View 1 (cartoon, rainbow, N blue to C red):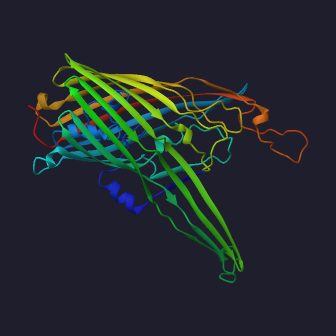
View 2 (cartoon, helix red, strand yellow; view 1 turned 90 degrees about the horizontal axis):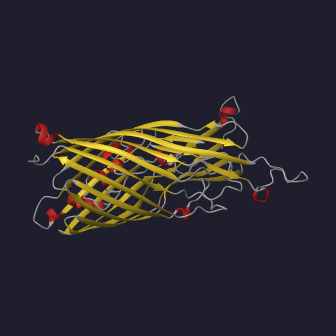
View 3 (cartoon, rainbow, N blue to C red; view 1 turned 90 degrees about the vertical axis):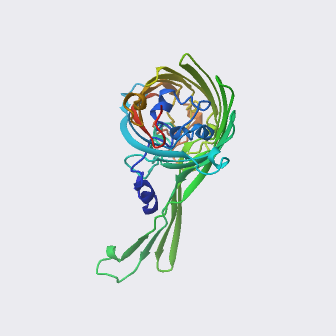
Length: 431
């Protein structure tokens, strides 16, 4: 079931910056600088586009900046039951983005504070709820929901002392509340069908998820970081009340969209040495708290994972920066021997990017960055265990199996992305 919805308050907020999807830095929506380094930026000096990677990096900001960015993604994904043709589950999607950050004016102690805002919104929906009709429907926890996520970030960072910076913020994610009342009013019209009165209510409450970070620079060529990001989920549902005379029936509905698990990130950055710098981030993701779209715990819980990403950046001339990154992201999906058919396997990430600084070239306060990135998933193979499958018809003798993944299945998912980011400096020109 897919429920596109709009909310006047959120749309008014989004209207300030247009539709955004690249700077709140949720999955697959990073700026070109972040994506070109394979997200390994938590220990590097930050900017308005890397607030979620590490809000403490915002304290490195020397002047106000505004970021606009866009990306195009193509998901190549297929599913095949054993000895059956592949089903194409791929799709394409794109988005644009906005973020802004600035040092605070005023006395010296206030000038050590930076604040930033960012918006993230898929181009097609304000909130997209995609719930499978069956518990055994093939679904990817990585690609079927996470690219559709909408959020807004607010962050603050403090330059405590030159070697130490701290920061924190909130990640706002909407849920959809849809209480519905259905009432039969006999004699209202000449048609019994038109005697039914349906009252719909729509609300989009926002849930706040915290993220905190620290970045230390003990020497000019060594950076260290530690970041915590809270779990983010959205709910969709409400109570449907049906009234027909003295009969009142209430049917509660609750769907869950699990966007991102809670994460701990440890990072290190070294350099630059003759214009070359390198960084490494290790991320622990608490996927074991994952729940199904029906807000139920899984019979076979997901695994917690540790992913490692690295990036290198080279600046030999003042106006050009070249980037490359990569790493490995293990899948949290356990062996799919039972009712569920979650898709996912270990994924290798490779990225390339570059940035052109127009300040020394043309005197224009603008930096243009672009990137390409690939997420190359391994092939997943599953074999069902009949003892772990629900009997489709208990009234019939023997076990009846109608599972969509029986007797087994294979799948593979890869994502290809290209993106562009414009950073406008509204302070002093770079000399």
